[in-house]
Image (cartoon, rainbow, N blue to C red; front, side):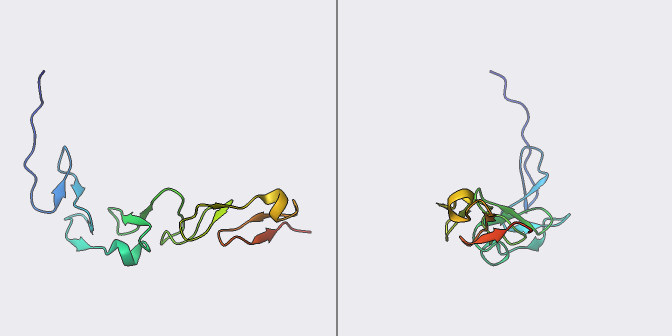
Length: 102
């Protein structure tokens, strides 16, 4: 089969059209560094703007918090709103409850 043309990217750029930064770099020239271990708490990777793209199961600006309904270091322990919080609240990312108003 036909394989389309490929690009040889300038240093710091990757991807089929050389429009993405190499891992750990961001910015218009892909020349600004981002330490994903520190910036994203080791639970995500730096995006093209220097922020974080969190791995599945993690959230927040620095990928530190678990989404509601799970908790634990790997965000892999479930918390059931009805049993854990007696249906009077919802589970938070630390395994505790956030009570509903009232």
